[in-house]
Picture (cartoon, rainbow, N blue to C red):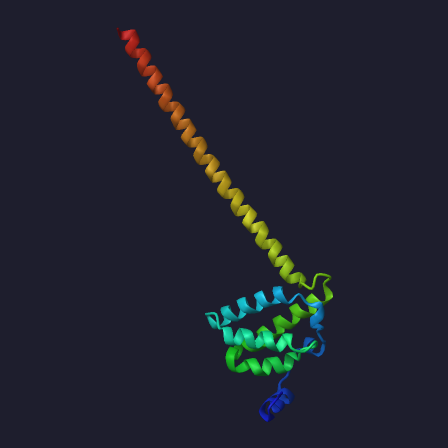
Amino acid sequence: MATGVDARLLKSTRFPPEFSQKVDMQKVNLQVMKKWIASKISDILGSEDDVVIELVFNLIEGPRYPDIKSLQIQLTGFLDKDTAVFCKDLWKLLLSAQSSPQGVPKELLEAKKLELIQEKIEADRAAETAKQRRDDWDRRDREVADLKDRDRRDRAAAR
């Protein structure tokens, strides 16, 4: 429901060409998108703002084909200069999600793959460091044992 001011803004604002494409929300995995939305809004605002996050959820969950242009106008008061970029990113992800068999944007799948690869690299690095530490301790223990054995032999030979 657009007010007169919103209607004027809708007519006067230039929107990206992607906004002319419709998104069928029945083809989108909302849980994945909700996580992205909450994270992105929290990043923009510097803290978690449940009101803004719930507003976006309601605006995209309500109709089967949400109106991104109206969403952008309504979010401008909250996200200021970041609104256009947020809405464009959101819409691109939603367009990608509706084209995906799982309803998940391929960009988020790629990001998750990279995150998992990075975690694996870090885990491997930590395991290698732990192994190196264990090997160092084992080597020190052997050296100490060798020194004690040599010391015992030297004492026994001196008697």
